[in-house]
Length: 298
Ligand code: SF4
Image (tube, rainbow, N blue to C red; front, top):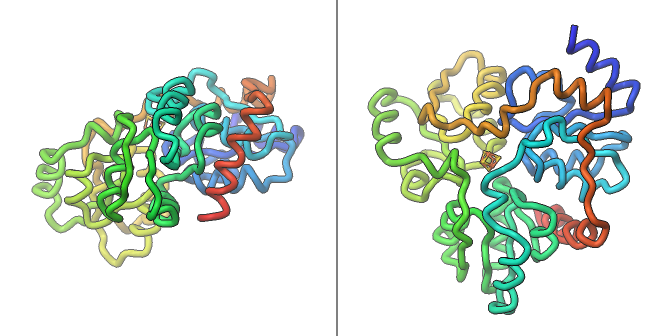
């Protein structure tokens, strides 16, 4: 069986398998750790394994490599990328920094290494609030997600400029989706990810990262929840809460990049040690500073 072969190869290669909550259920089930960006970053930074197989998209595997430069980090599917991370690049950020030297650049972890390297601090959806509060007296630029940026900007009344990027999965959500879901499930609580538009976030009973949503639903004494984030999260939600019901806010919440990875790809990555992530050492060092500051402040 493929899962048995993966387990055996993992031991032989001294590897750890990490999977994001948005991966398919069978990939989540084969992983040693399933988590959101913050949890997986912490695990990547602390692991004593020689090899990390990152089941997610490329900026996540890059983050693992930045934090653990001496490990071999593999991304099972090379083309698994993040459209939002591609909405900013080094040149455009350099130009912005030159024109606005007074602004602290707060960089969502959903970005590439060369962008992190030009930033002052990274954040994830789990720790963004805590970290921007730390810099609340400073002028800031938030990159690249305008929605998460708008949410923290409004909540803490910050002097913050917003890069016009977005995650298409969450940015697609709208008030009609909320109205319809509330009508269909009037007794359910509505939990949403902060990458959704502000108007949608303002309708929610709880706003949090993927991990935050899982913890909130698991701890709640309510039984029914409308979920406003990528549908991969339904797997751990149902697994951890067999007595509760979860309804996706919309049927459009699929990140195709997150769904590319199959068990076969995980097996092939381990067997052939592909596709290895490499990062220029200067970029790695500079990007690590922004990530280390995030881990220190969160
Ligand atoms: S869910 Fe959105 S932010 Fe996450 S990888 Fe997919 S496109 Fe990027």
